[in-house]
Image 1: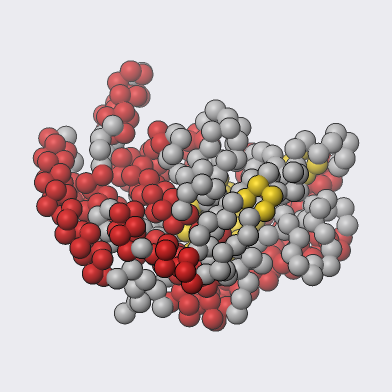
Image 2 (image 1 turned 45 degrees about the vertical axis):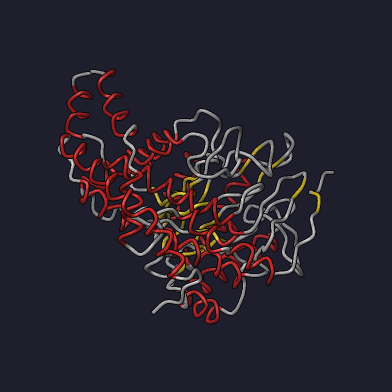
Length: 430
C-alpha cells in the first residue's frame, strides 16, 4: 500500500464536513443533466480516469528576469519535490505521474523510482535541458545547443538527450520532451536555413536513440530567450520536424508559447487531423509566455481546446492518446495549491467538453447556423461541473476541497520547519 503524506484522518474530517452538501449538489446537477439526455455518472467516471502529470520544477517557487522571492519550505532536491507531488496526487487523485527535468532532477534512477513508488507515483515524459548551462558543463549553450554552429556543442547536446532517455528507461518513462532556446537576437546573427538543418541533423540522432515503444515530443515557442528569431518558433515548423523525424515524433503544444490571440484550438485540430499531436503543457497567459495557473486567465480557451480533444476521443480514433502535463511558474502563491487547482481546472475543461451535444452541434454546423452552434458550446461551458469533480475526488479517496484539506493538514508549515529557508535573490538584469 502506498504511503500517505497527509493523514487520512485529516482528509476524512475535511470530507465529512462537506459530503452532505456535495451529495445534494450532485443529485441536483444529475437531475438537470438528465433532462439534457446526459448521465452524470458517465461523466464522473470519465473524469475519475483523467490524469495530468505534475512538472517536478513546478513545486518550487518561480521567478522572473528581475527577481525571485522564495517561499517557505521549498524543496531542497528532487526527493523533496516527489513528496510535494505526492501531496498533490493524494488530495486531487488527478496527478499520478511526475515529469522530471534533467539535469535539475538528476539522481540515481533506481533511487528515484523507489522514492516515487513509496507514494504510488510513476514518471511521465522526461525533459532535457540544453537551454541553460549546468555546473561543470564543458561547452556553453549561450549561442545555441542542437543548432549550434560548433559541432562539439551539438554533440554535447545530443549526448545529454540520449542520457535523458537512458534515465527514463530505468524510471519507466515512455517519452522525451525536447525544447530548445536556440535562436538569435539580431538580424544576420544566424543563417536561418543552416541553423534549422543543423537542428534536424542533431535531432535525427536523438530520435535514433529512442526505444521502440517511446515517443519524442518537440516543443515550439515563439520567442525567449531568443528575441529576434527562434529555431522552433511555431506549430508549422514543429510539424515539419515531426514529419522529418518519423512516426515516433510528435508535436507538443504549450498553451503559453503562442502569440496573443492565436487560435490554439485550431492548431490542436490540425495536429490531430494529421496525427502529429503529442500532448500539452497546460498553463495560461495574459501577455506572453507567462506560465500562469491553468484556467486562471482564459478558461474558455482551455475548454475550446478540450472540445477538440473530446470530439476525437468520443469518435473512437485508434491510437489517440495525447499526453497531459502542467507547466507553470508560481511566483506569489503556494506552488502546491496552484498545481492542485490547475489540475482541477484541466479536469473541469474536460468534463465540460464531455457535456457538448455533439449531434446538435454537427447539425448547426452543417446548417450554417452560427448562433446556435456557438450557443451549443456555451451551454456546456456554462454548466457548473464542480459537483462532478468533487464527487470524482471523493470516490477515489481524494479531498472534496483539496486546498481546504491541504491547509487544514498544515503541510506547508511542517515542511518549512524541516527544510532550510532559501535566501532571496535578484535576476540577471537588476
